[in-house]
Length: 236
Ligand SMILES: *Cc1c(COP(=O)(O)O)cnc(C)c1O
Image (cartoon, rainbow, N blue to C red; front, side, top):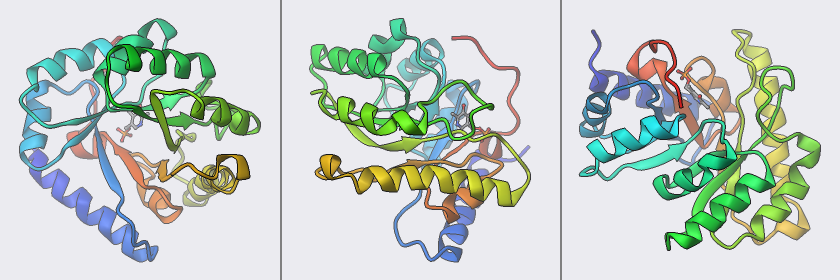
């Protein structure tokens, strides 16, 4: 068995190497995707220096968060959002990367305000390869959604997240990530969004993070390459 501290160290070295190879200067944040991992496994990763964790299922995350209440962890929600879970998510996470429609953004903002918490960092999830996932807003709708989202008082739009179709074809990986990056650039250059700090491009998972970093990822979301293959997915 590989120790989590070894996996983390190896991953950080790989991320640095990919960043250098792409002449990137900014930091690429490693988000440890910890769905289906136990609180003990998260604690081991935390003790090895990992502070940002991504979870897909609200109930599962809340249980772990209470077991890890003594740790200074930055929690990211990265799973599909049912509107009746938006309130819980707003209250238990620092970031929500999977916002794909206005109704969810409105509920997150409202709940965040009611809980008197600082603005929630969010990314809009875009659907970059239509067939693969139903989640994510379409590129054509992105600008209109972004405009409505930034008008909400208790959330802070930080950028885009995408989950392109998994492929071993490196060229395809680059093509898919380039589309997402282009969407972010378009937002950043929109006159009517110009005051925003859209600094986040969350692309890249265990199988394609190198290509993602080369295409400009600022967050990579890594699960199995850190923790090993997952057991069957848990339920929300
Ligand atoms: C599970 C998951 C990941 C991590 O996937 P790995 O292939 O295990 O690295 C990243 N992002 C999202 C949205 C996920 O659901």
